[in-house]
Image (cartoon, rainbow, N blue to C red; front, side, top):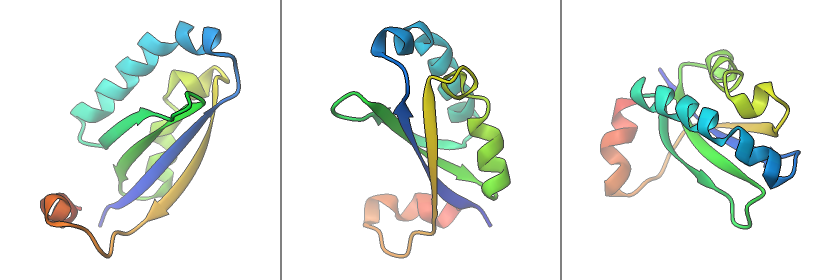
Length: 100
């Protein structure tokens, strides 16, 4: 059974450095969206990092996924990871949750 993981990214570098790796980061996101591992992602407001909702088999797989992020590999952002199992959700998410 899969689990859900929130990846919470916090930038360690100024936005000028973040921007240098943004195209590579977007390619990373696209790869894992195509593999069905990412459900949603976006920037924090204010722009101090971002969040990704990841569907992975276990924490080890989740780590292997975020280790591929150019932001992680180049020391641009820290990753905090929260594993959770949804127990309540609205009808919009029911089909997604039933696939996990």
